Length: 370
Image (cartoon, rainbow, N blue to C red):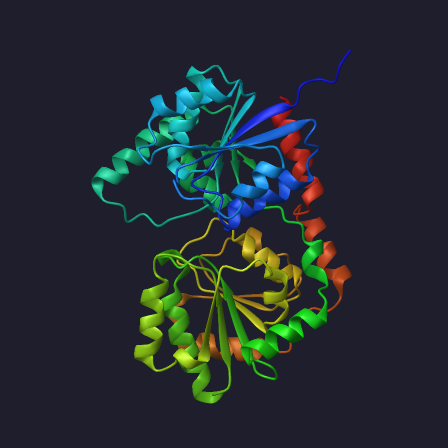
């Protein structure tokens, strides 16, 4: 007898760029047995994304669809490129489109995965849309996964929260790459950017409203009043980057901020920081916060950060956005020189909270095989 065919999984995403969910998927894809499982990816972006080439090297396909995200188009893609054993959707309420199309195409395992939270300020039409999509998700999904209680409640509804009808799936990461990093690379970065022997505040995230970069600038204004040599590293890109750069110039703090763009050397970025700041307006969990803790960094975060993101090793300080930039600045300066240098403490925190890559892959494989 020959080897059994691998389980074919269609991952439905927006585009495979360097963001939290996408990075988690790549962590899993690199470490699964690709003879037993293979991933294809639906992308709603016509442009090439950061991980596209690596996906192809690993044996996966990028299937480009239009942004209309219709059930008919998704159904045709599943039939054309399948048959698939699993459709795993990560596109918030658009998971409803994917699960209905997968059901019609005869896919046995249909997963809707909650990764984020939002407030309840949507207008009337959006609320109708959410109600419809939520109904489709809950009806046609065989499995519901959430990275946090808040994310599960938002996507699947309070009714499902009460029934405990979804499973908790942590945003697993390959934390080993963050534990220790060659100091020569960190030194090179600090020399190149002129941040040696300075207080370095850091943030990694897409330039979008949810990440609250505007508030970060106000925090930085407060910090440099007392620490004029302090620097802020902003890693990432996005639609609001130019606006934030202009605001920094207007506030007169542009020279104190390093706009680093999209980077591949994320462990080096973290090791170059003294404190990680995460003032999000909303988050499902915040994979980047796990990476910061893996790097031993003290983290100052907003109340929007889900409690599941705290490893419980004393690195996370949570503040309200209503406290204002001065309070945030004081807390950030207080946390300088408070890194966790004992890697065993960090490793135990990941294992205790179920964030190890091995645990995550095992949990996911059990679902895929079902």
